[in-house]
Amino acid sequence: MTPPEARIRREIADHNGAIPFSRFMELALYSTEGGYYETHERTIGRRGDFFTSVSVGDVFGQILGTRFAACLGQLGEGPLGIVEAGAHDGRLAADILGWLASHAPELFPRLTYTLVEPSPVRRGWQQERLAPWGSRIAWVEGIGQVPDGVRGILFSNELLDALPVHPLAWSVPDRGWRERGVGVSPSGDLAWVLLPRDPSRIDQLFREAHLADPTELHGVLPDGYILELCPAAAAWWKGVAERLAEGWIVGIDYGMSMEELLRPERTGGTLRAYSHHRVSDNVLADPGSQDLTAHVNFTSIEAAGMALGLVTEGLSRQGEYLVRAVDAAVRRGVEFPWTPAQRRQFQTLVHPQHLGHSFRVLEQRRRGPG
Image 1 (cartoon, rainbow, N blue to C red):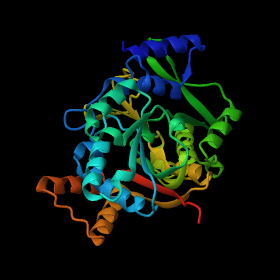
Image 2 (cartoon, helix red, strand yellow):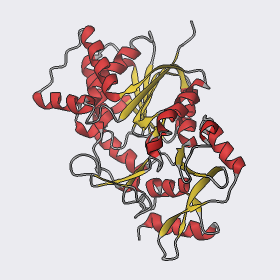
Image 3 (cartoon, rainbow, N blue to C red):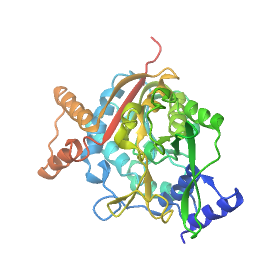
């Protein structure tokens, strides 16, 4: 039994036989007692649990660097900041900083790169990798510790899809949503359970996620239809927006719109587990030993930003976003002297059958005074 599972079982016993799945996911991924992200430093790439845009190579960071440089160049004189949350081992930060140092010498001396990292373990990985950048780097434990008035870019890559979600199951007999939780089966295994019916809590979850209950579908939803809500992602995005005085928030993640998530073929929701490049629906197995993700609801995230005055500048697939960034850079005279291996990286990042189609990029902006 993994340490997170032992903790989960204790909490189930202490809470009348069930806990919300969101709590299960929090412990499985983030517990200091063996949570997945506390113990898996380098489980991406060919030998790890999954591929990411970062693990493909340095081209992803180079393209983000050129896009960020174009944005920062619009902000005029004065200090500039890039804030990254969910930096894991710091590889993407190193790629972005390396590109900016070489290709944006007019901006780089004014730049501070801040990493939001609550975990001492992950912070140690980042400090080791980013040591060459010295005084350009700062760390904070949470978004609330980022200084007010950031002028620049706050971004995350594959962070929001790992925040704890609340799976809701449609109940035809109740004509309403029921929250799914985790309990223990008669055989002793961790198992799905339905939490007691609580319409006021369901309404609260929709409100906190900045979403409307799709009442127009109530009459056609099949019994057991699953919809995941993630108030934590909306709250995180709003927390980021509160730190931004002028500039952009960029979110890169697996995800889609509310309309897409409610398509009939997704009756079972989007929660998945990943281990050794294998995907599984058995998200309750061996907590702490596999990554858990659910597709980001970009309708929720976009609405959360708009509630704080942000304006959406784009929501697109990753492939389209990266191609546009490269095209714009080339028009500005930027050169990309990529090796054949790096050109293959680019194809992997933008091709619809690889990473170009499954990831979305949301850019929202706050303009400064005047």
